[in-house]
Image (spheres, rainbow, N blue to C red):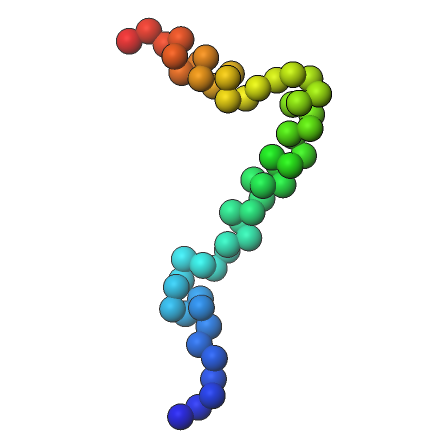
Length: 55
């Protein structure tokens, strides 16, 4: 039997571009101090948009 390592990409093909999922973390890290300094709360903003809709 060969001592070859099996690539995780061959077994789990959806793991090809996993670094793509790390990009939003960088955006959050950069924007968080800015939002804190200007007093903007994105969660409250989007919840106001969601709950202000008339059904």
